[in-house]
Image 1: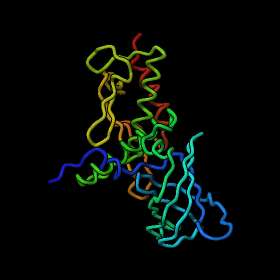
Image 2 (image 1 turned 90 degrees about the horizontal axis):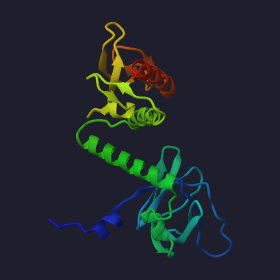
Image 3 (image 1 turned 30 degrees about the vertical axis):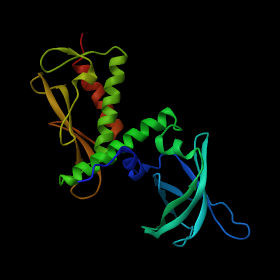
Image 4 (image 1 turned 120 degrees about the vertical axis):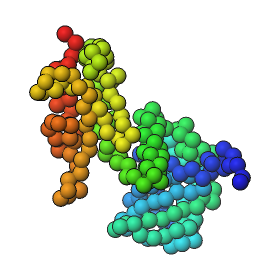
Length: 245
């Protein structure tokens, strides 16, 4: 078995498009206009994948390209190595022939802003978890992860603004320190039981409707919510009920 060196891994790694815009134009005789009605799907050291609703390219056709991310730009030449369809759009795979000196900044993330770097980390984590869960025969839901992110952000901010709560073991905690994410993606936190008044650990889960593809957020033994805003409002009330006097 051959051990893969880091440089080889970097060449094979494909990065999500993020907020990078792309323009291309056909190479050849005469004037060829730049086209910007494109969506960058992913990018690697070897090439990139694009979607377009109307641009038509053929395999082996050569093009110029320009990538832009914030104030940073990079240009080069590529050849179409794949031309097909993805739903109602045309999908193209491009193999790079030549790139300028700024290109590595796009591949390594050095040209990205702080917010773009954060989103890059999130997208790569989502890609990894999707692959990991599918290999295990389970379906990983990005929507479930966004629920966890939203609740964690709410709990973190409440603590920063001075709220402390009492956990199920009677200890005083910051709200974010009370959250536990289960292996299946569900989230649990302490809440006051409506019937007994005791503080118990309660699970929030993403539930798919049996009649449609719609999802709802279900609090164990309690109400369900059709949107994340209503869920967060309810959690504010739940944290208030167990807040430290």
